[in-house]
Length: 346
Ligand code: NAD
Image 1: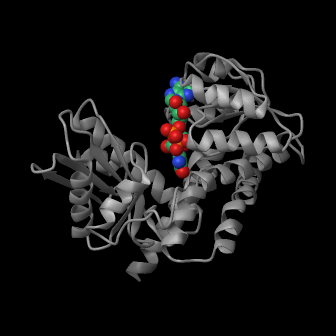
Image 2: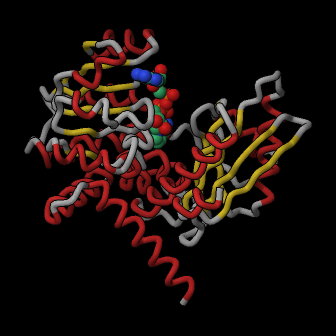
């Protein structure tokens, strides 16, 4: 476990077991040097405790990088709640998790993630103030989608020399909270859509509302499009899928899209521009962090729409250094965190 913490440069790993509610939770705090660590809590089944720990560690580092590149005064963390196999009282379990979060005294601020919803955040809020995405703050997904949309526009400007998305084709994998809203924004901007989801109802909605063409879930990688927008699963850019891609750009919301870091090099070798996931999908984090800090809506919108310019600058830097964009993004995020460490030690 310490090896894994070391390779992820994670500061702290906290465990909690509450036999009364069935809560089994892990909180990975990657870093607090830039401020309280913020990051969602997942509530999904895991095949093993090791898988749950690995997920928490990997995702916590991504949150630190996301906060650093977005200029938010936060470090990154992630909580993983292992879904009980037997019956459980959801409200009691969430309140118990809130007590666990509260013991960390504000070093960790929790939020919505896969398998959790606004009503869970309200339950957590009964035990701790260190929670966002409560019903008075709301779902971050529309802001994540807005940031992805701005990122797609910047990517089209950089790679395809296009100032408009009109008549460009975008393939979208996953039409959930984020993917559906990205589809709506792209349709509004005049883009053509090819979509896939394992849920046929989500697909049908996009066909009806956005004139989208659908393909089977496994066919989305080979779809003939200008831009591929993954908004479903992680690790979808891998040895199996990269050779299938027939696009110039990959730009979508899914977390941890590269199965391994070297897959970023594979994309560059195929002359495919990759928008680092933790930068293009930062709109939701910007929204929840600034709402938590009670910042005005105008500031939030300015920062979320600024994701496009931030990406464009990163693309330019990567081109100048002839390096993959994800390496430049990692270097930049690590440098920001190191500088904060240095300043706090001085
Ligand atoms: P969601 O669960 O609402 O939607 C995911 C969609 O993907 C679902 O419709 C699901 O049916 C579909 N899907 C699952 N497996 C698929 C497959 N094999 N092929 C095609 N579709 C498949 O999730 P979301 O909130 O929209 O988030 C989407 C992605 O973006 C996730 O990776 C999430 O971690 C990431 N993300 C979300 C936010 C946010 O604000 N919601 C913020 C940052 C990152």
